[in-house]
Structures are given as C-alpha cells and as structure tokens.
Image 1 (cartoon, helix red, strand yellow):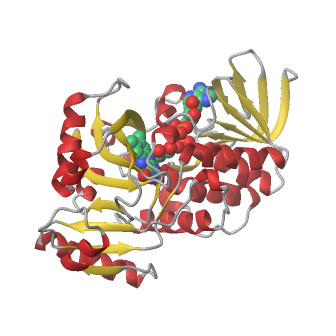
Image 2 (tube, helix red, strand yellow; image 1 turned 30 degrees about the vertical axis):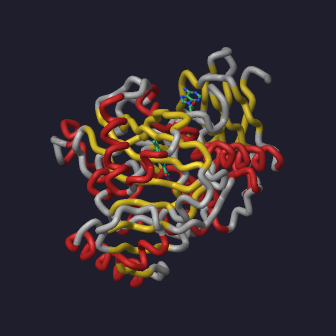
Length: 382
Ligand SMILES: Cc1cc2nc3c(=O)[nH]c(=O)nc-3n(C[C@H](O)[C@H](O)[C@H](O)COP(=O)(O)OP(=O)(O)OC[C@H]3O[C@@H](n4cnc5c(N)ncnc54)[C@H](O)[C@@H]3O)c2cc1C
C-alpha cells in the first residue's frame, strides 16, 4: 500500500457495523477501505447473541430496529450465517407483565408489526419447557436470529467483491480531517471516514458519550427442539433500559445446531473480560426460574463481550462535531447486530444525498454536543 492511498470512504473497525457500512457504501459505487485490527467480526459482534429484534423503548429505537429488520430479511445470506426467523416470544410472568404484553401488542399492531398474544395454555403448548404458572406471552413472528461473526464476514466479503479494500491486522492510531493513520505508519485519505470501533469508541475519541456495558453468554451442547423461539422475559426491558450497574434477565435462543444460547447480563464499570462467577450464577438462576429444565443441560462454553452504551440508549450515527469528514457509527449497545444494517443505510444515504428510509435526526451525535452546552449534568450521568 502506498503511503497515502485515497478512498471515497474509509471505515475504522470491522465489526458488524463497520462491515455493514463498507458494504452499503460499496454498493453505492464508493471506493471503500475497511480497517480492522483483529479478525473481522471478532469484537462485540462475535460475543453477541444475534437476535434481530424489533424494540419499542422509544419511537426512534423502533424505527431503526424495524427498518434494519427489513434490511436483514432482504439480505439473502448464505446458510452459514444461520439467519432463521424464529420469532420472539415475550414472556409475562404475572398479570402485571401480561398487561405490559397487551400494551406492547397494541403498540406494535398500530405500527404494522405482526404479533399475537398467547394465553398461558397456548404458551405452554408452544414452549413446553417453560416453567408452569406463567401468565402468557406475546409472539412477534418476524423477529429472527443470525450468527453474527459469519454475517459480518459475509457483508465484508460482499463489499470486497464490489471493490472494497479490506485491511485486516492493522490498528487505527488516529482519525480525522480526511485521514486515517495506521500502526504500520501508512495513512489512508478519504473524503469520509466512518468511526465504527464499537465499545472502544472512547479510546481515540474520549469525548464521546460511550461507555462499556459488559455481558455474559452461555452456550449449551446440542438439544434439538428444546425450544422453538427466542424466549425473553418481559422484565428484560427493565434490565436492558435501566441504569442499574448489574442486572440479569431470562433470554434464551435456539441455534440451528440445536444448541441454546443463554443470556443475559449487563454490567457497567466492569472492564475486565473475565467471567464473573457471581453474575453468571445470577444469570443461570434467572434462566432456571423461567425454564427449570435448563439445569439439566450441559453448558460447553461461557464468554463475555462489551456493548457500547450511550446515555439515551440510542446509537451515534452521523457527523462528528467539528470535522465534516468524520462520521460516527457507534453506541449501539445491545442492539448493534440488529441495527447495523439500518446504520449503514442512514450513513450511505447521507453520503449520496438520497432520502433515507427513516428520519436520521434521533441518532445524530450532535444531540449530545447540544446537551453538553445546555445541560451540565450530562457528563456526570455517564
Ligand atoms: C453479550 C452480548 C449479547 C448481545 N446480543 C445482541 C443481540 O441479541 N442482538 C443485537 O442486535 N445485538 C446484540 N448485542 C450487541 C451487539 O453485539 C453489538 O452492538 C454489535 O456487535 C456492535 O458492533 P460494532 O461493529 O459496533 O462493534 P464491534 O463488533 O466491537 O466491532 C468494533 C471493531 O473495531 C475494532 N477496533 C477497535 N479499535 C480499533 C482500532 N483502533 N483500529 C482498528 N480496529 C479497531 C475491534 O477489533 C472490533 O472488531 C450483544 C452484545 C453482547 C456483548
């Protein structure tokens, strides 16, 4: 590579977000470079559960997840990416949560998302291994699961086929003003730089309101047919959207191999990658509460990963403050597999000037720059 090769778009970070951005830009005819320090899809992307899910925490979150889900459906990934429309079954443990399920059903139906309330009996018929005594549930059939690292690699390979340059094993040391400096002393120049370093976003840009939120996942041996849907307790929303430092929730996924992925945990302030036995025990105890038979299954591996969390639970997608060449694509927290494609779609439209499928404003990084000048507490909340 020459000392300063030029591109239309240079992407820093080859997680699912960076790979999706590289593909979306290559598809629009841009000359693209994608730089990853390790293996493509090896960061949070490899640690993630791969639940492609519509969420309703806010209108903005709904718009991005729904738009992204439609893009996932149209991708036609290879079988190796294990994209399967399992649907999500949201589980209501009691009558109060059932009211929440009913509210969710109305909200989704008003926005065109197919979904159906299940009585306790219907839910047991659908998932016999669930604990007895649950109040019922909400089935969202268009939700899906995918194997994230393979999907990321496939997006990058598609970009490569369209002419993108994949630069793997190189660390970005500095970025901005149309330049990206790599650890081997080379420099890339690009009209647009995309900053997609996931939970490491604050390393090169400490001013970004992104902090790490650790998660644990467990995978079992193969038990084909043990469950059919992605199963999530409705209380998950409290865990995901609350700001408690440690939380766990019942969240189990069937893999096409017959294995089960068991989650999930969320921790702020835990920056070591090692397994935290206490939180792992709490997570498994929660899982056993909803599905006692899980205790009889063999666990073959446990791992951790770091979500990139922002204070308002929405990602940073758009131009960085004070540098019109630098565009952010980070802060996707626990939804970055789902929302990677929507993120890429928004940025690619911003570059071409095409009208985006959804309004980009809620995700613009400028919302924090503005907040920082008007609300002095924002930084303290981080
Ligand atoms: C336990 C867990 C479960 C999850 N479950 C789900 C789920 O079910 N559904 C969902 O939608 N999301 C889920 N997520 C969230 C999802 O995994 C992330 O939001 C998503 O992977 C973020 O992708 P990314 O590309 O932004 O980050 P990453 O995948 O972390 O990619 C960033 C990349 O940048 C590279 N990098 C960093 N610094 C440099 C540098 N200086 N130079 C070059 N490269 C660099 C890293 O090596 C990494 O490959 C989960 C996350 C966790 C931790």
